[in-house]
Length: 140
Image (tube, rainbow, N blue to C red; front, side, top):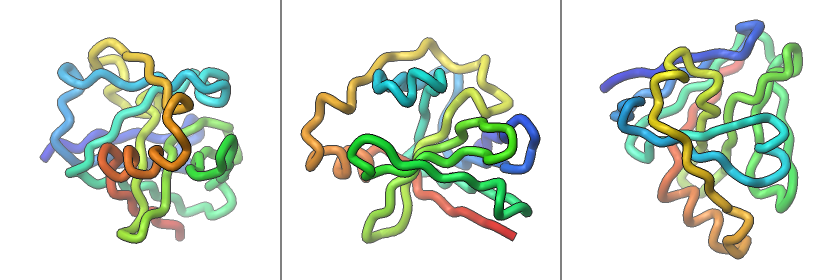
């Protein structure tokens, strides 16, 4: 299984997305919400893969909830880079990666715009369970 790697700008937070994504065949999703637009975030996920977010600096892992507060954005509290979005389920955490943090960012297919705000709030968690990647966060 290919692994896509990345980090925040200061490299305190590291990402590894293990799975079957082929960047040239994967169109990242550009959410049209004001938060994602302000960060120019575009997202990819692999429901059959695994996302590892690691850091040796616990203070570097910033977390932010906005809107419905159902999902949590992970960012570096030192350099400010938005790395991922996660959602806690009964089966564990699932998430998506901001492509702009990946070493292979320029190799992805053209971005497509999505409008999750158009979904009723009760439908979002099911969409995330179906599309997002299982996540493991390692601090220490």
